[in-house]
Length: 402
Image (cartoon, rainbow, N blue to C red; front, side, top):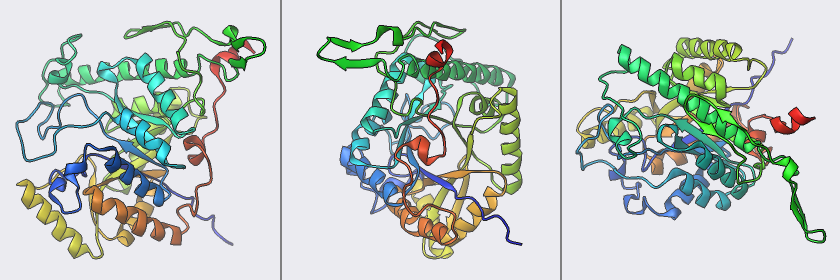
């Protein structure tokens, strides 16, 4: 009796500057002088597409990067400064054909109306391959850039004051995503007539007010941008504990989580599925991806030596919220298969050095997973939702009228 073959895994990469290790910019392959050019980012995304990856995420923030917890630092020996992730995504998307492009959006200090049209535009620019990664910020210095609210400093995320603040910020993010999703639906798919002979460009009856009234936002709608090609671009979020798991369950299509072993993976997936049930979304597909920082080389010794060299340059050992994997593509494939037994449907890999580890993912890891029948041989869909096995959603306002 033959057993059921294991299902293919989904793979994404998280792009952050020259890589996730703080000393990555000092590696010969890092190209730090090109970091703020369109060509640099286009090359990274092209390399990811060469590996048939599902999508890339692009990091962003509302303040300079910092090695400190929730406050700025004065370091000058690490990469500081970013390009806007949504604008980078819109620049590189037309240069690719299949891979999804998912920029980070900080919900805490931006307006959902602006982001809804920015991501809808990205979906048009990419012909249906857009998503967003929604993020919060509890940094007081970032709140000071906007002057609309004050966020008090917190020492640790597990203090009562911090839990109250973080809960509020994630509740706000959930409402934020709800507004964005409603605005994407505020134009029906056939709202645009574009009939030059009759002089009718749009059917006003097929544009809808969303009339969102919540604790954090009051948004009338409709959007100024017609419904995106995917209907609903992908919503994704990174989550480390119950409060953000709840956001994933309520509003996301993909949650990125950080298990360090199979047991943790199983427990996290079970918690997200329970929260999904509580949110009334048990019948909807919500992917759970494991995040890993990766240093890949031909031998484990080479990878360890490279990590040691980078740590020495940085002046301290590198630590991360996610598990740090150091070894070969074969060993990483073993680990991904093991963690997938916990219910993870894919992985978002963070290259320690983008110029080194991203090609190792696309040229070494992907062929290894294909040999194991755990990854695609070719892109099988034209949209990001299609790549992830997600159907195109019905427009909520058209459905309500019908």
